[in-house]
Length: 169
Image (cartoon, rainbow, N blue to C red):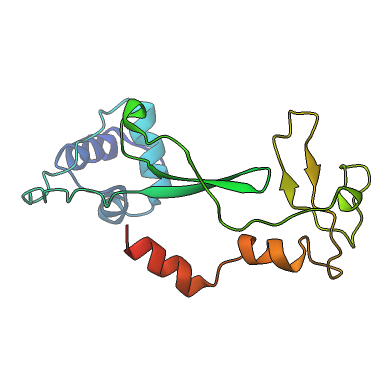
């Protein structure tokens, strides 16, 4: 099949009327949709704007639920807890306040550095990692678990407790 002047003229007319490449191919016969698209491009026919869709009134966006996150930071045996309103302006964020969650005394001989941790020792960090007195708990723990029993209770909350905490905010 060749593109005769009559077929090119019909293609141009049908294209300007807004028919799809598939409809034009069916109308012309003996050509594929891709052949029509290729010819349209080679002829440099302008792209057609889509027919105006039925305009629906835009729905008013509901305000996003306030997002908050809780940050825990270990400083010695004190856990600093901060609730952050993620939508708040940076200068209105609350200050971190220390909250004594549980006082766990770690004997000096039990304390570990990163180099002395093993798969059987608690890897709960205590203190500021940038300071010289930073250490890990080092208490015995079950194989495959990163924390001793006391620190595991701090680290892992039952999912129901987390849901209740989220709802109360």
